[in-house]
Length: 184
Image (tube, rainbow, N blue to C red; front, side):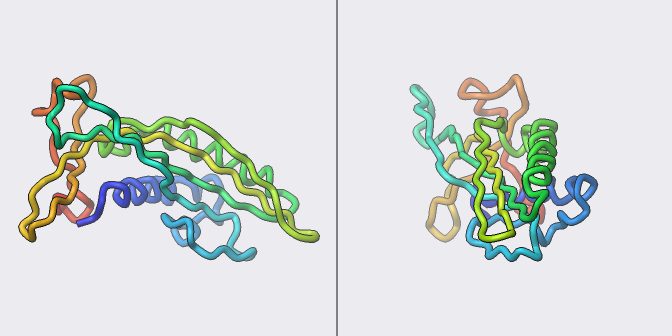
């Protein structure tokens, strides 16, 4: 059973891997990673890293004590190098933003995804400039502990459809199935 944050990162990766090759043919699935610790090599740039940073649990007065409304900070970092690094990173950042705007629920996996910030870092040594553009998204979703057969309490990702969202519509939420068809 995969944790909700992993499922969210994988969903973003799958959408980007399916669409970004039409923007830049070098961006293939092997250049998109869901881990910030992935080693990067100049010959494998541009590359995209998808990782999570912070997650807030919003207060829900009068809610089921186990129901949690989460706001996850998800980062999509585009790293490019060379003389055209700024232009390449800008084009890819614009495409990532458009793709996630077009599917803000990640296929009804989450309540919503919205861009909150864009940061640009420059570096590199000598004649090889390196540029990184980090897009930060706020991903809103609900979880509730479910009993596991092994005694633990894993979290379950729940989905519902607007406008039936939030505490008053808790019975309308359904468990999310991961791509293998197994309920997390």
